[in-house]
Image 1 (cartoon, rainbow, N blue to C red):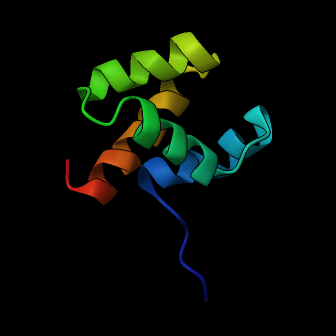
Image 2: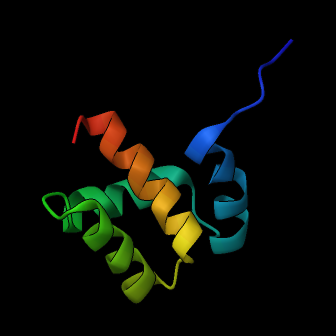
Length: 70
């Protein structure tokens, strides 16, 4: 039996569907452009520069930061 994905990663399928890019694409953008920014600055950057909704941006940033120990 597979476990249901919970937390911020549960948004990933809808992010990929809505914005047409895989999650690795978004992680790469964050890495290349706003690595040293705060959580909310990274969220704002995704919203302002890529028109990502707040909830989706927050989920991407939460996973990005957790996986990098930020």
